[in-house]
Length: 243
Ligand code: SAM
Image 1 (cartoon, protein in one colour):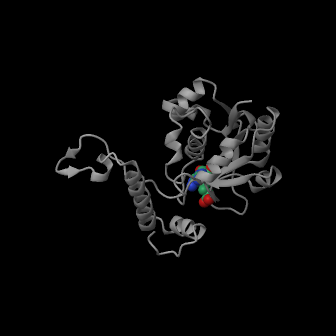
Image 2 (spheres, helix red, strand yellow):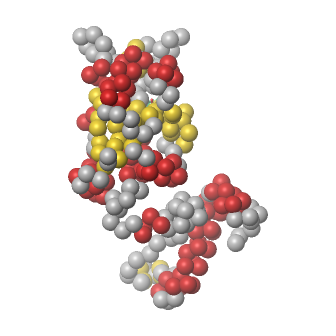
Image 3 (tube, protein in one colour):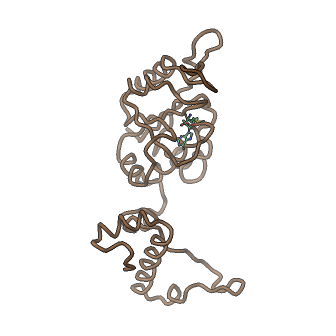
């Protein structure tokens, strides 16, 4: 079957959202991937279909109920297994390009979008849910985080990107040795007194490739010492050594 994202959310109308536009939107329309929303509200309890209640132990805010989330997850699983169940959460392991690559190679993903103070821990334990974060900051809800994960993953599915070559050299890619990408330029050759680096206009492909590699190393070393060290270790270089 086609790669499928199942999303458990209180706001199904947030999907596909921006994922319905541009490359991801075209790919969705072409059936290169599939999107299913599971509206959490439908599994709420009582006349008002409540999904949340006050936190055990007291304190501010509300927590999504285990029984309600369990019913939604069981419904999601009726469609057959489709990859891991992930809870978008600031407490999770940070999302990376290599995780997106691994997810793109699988059958899909089921994503839980939290709201309020989050989800009752027991249902996360019962369903063996892994928490995934999109960064060290707190969002209002998991929907934007889910869209970030889906966007990063879907563009890696074969045929979604018009020119697959653009994947080969981009930031964090294996072709770029996991480093940040070199700076990009386009016409005009002169703009407000600023020039394009001469080598890029030389037509010398070997020199251009060497410049790009050196720039990727320079930027990564400057901005992301963590990535630089990981690459330098793998390449058998001492951290701090330029190239
Ligand atoms: N009480 C939680 C905490 O302090 O860790 C934060 C809850 S947050 C207000 C509501 C929901 O937004 C979370 O359940 C999660 O689904 C989502 N969310 C917030 N920040 C996120 C992040 N950095 N990555 C992924 N999801 C996030």
